[in-house]
Length: 627
Image (cartoon, rainbow, N blue to C red; front, side, top):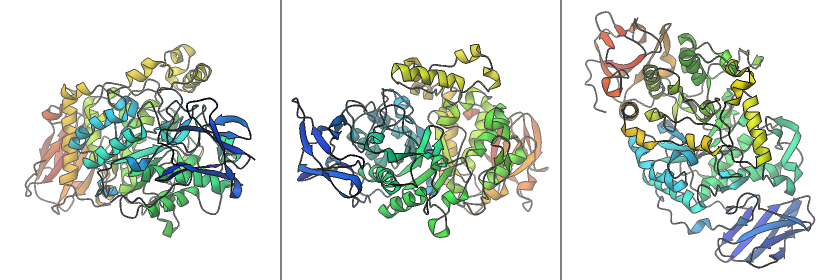
């Protein structure tokens, strides 16, 4: 059931009999509302200054689609910081939008529980042939049939130009006009709910994009030089006027949850949100969002490289109350083990099966020990953090797109190893995340792309190539010069998924594997939090294994061979079991592109591998399920 009790306080608020405009501009003496009437000059209406620099004016109800700006102290005219749409771009006028006119069909939607999330991250512009909200909606049925339960949209807050990852957003309340209208985004979400899919949105509260950020015109208090981030001055969450800054971003979150019926937010780089105040911003955000949607599942998921248990500890227990956390350590261990990555932060990881098993057991690897890369301790004790609160992946937009050539993991390792790693990921009790196209081993890369004006674009291109200068493969300038230009339209086009691949081999075989694994996860595995994590162990230098309870009350064994041929004793995974085991599924099955050579010897309790592969074993006394 979607609650509609929340009411906005910022922006152009359209009610049945009036339109109220409200903006925080504490440094201004006079603020005028400039309404585009189609004639010159625009109609001007003075706004009333209220408490602590809030200006507002109530007008007769204006038709949705009316364009407007604000003029500050007689100078300039700027888009609304909380404008709901920027049809002419981030430098143009804002447009009034009435969200109540959309005909939702999801009145009975209650969301998806955290324990049932299988997240699929996608970029609207490159996910579908059309590159729009409606184009994405057309592909949702395929994701539902695959076994996905939630899509996660990379940021859609409007940005300059026509192509961008979304992390240069500046109009934080406005869906990017190059993807479609606000109602077309609502149609995407409504369609997802009709198919049983939750929709999460990536939001960026740690910085503003470099072009078109007009917040500073309204108040210099949005940012502070007391805190710094990789993008410059930090967000002012704990200084003078910070309550208004906090309210702006919390209102943004509530706006997405309520005006668009979203099922959660992925909070970008929360480690960059510096807050020394008595209550951390994330704690306040979590409480405000969760209190507003008590009747449906809404998830707040942090991207945070600090491995802080506090992030997902309930507020009542002294934490910040978020629902889950992107934990990259598993990804990094697997990249080191399978692809040999050692530059940058990958140098902190061995990729050994011992360390990989520890990462699975804990949810993350660094739990307070020294990080050579950071030259400081990293992480906290994860004891008590349920596995479902750790979002794990083999690849995501960062881990692909921040590579010089946007290579996906399966572009750099042998198919058998990718299939084995895929089985590992989807059999874990943690919350899995796939990146678009992963399920069919897409041939397209995912490159870094932008569409800034010429001067800024030149700086972005130079900066992109310069950031790889410490990597061995790009030590000389000639090597860096071949890194794709983010500003080139071709860089964007190369990143677009080729959906026709799904029906061709070997992509179709990988797709069958993912569908079978997700069906097994959904229909056979129990949702228990701890059994697999606590049982994970290295069986030898190339093999790990763990147990999973099933809905029938028995246990399956998952054995993953990451490298090379060899035999392994799997008795340490079930030392008290003396019966026979049968293979339920193997990544080496010919149907999935393998050669079917994994052999199980019950007499010796050994598995023989001809190369990388993963297998699921179940007691022979239990009939193997049909998935």
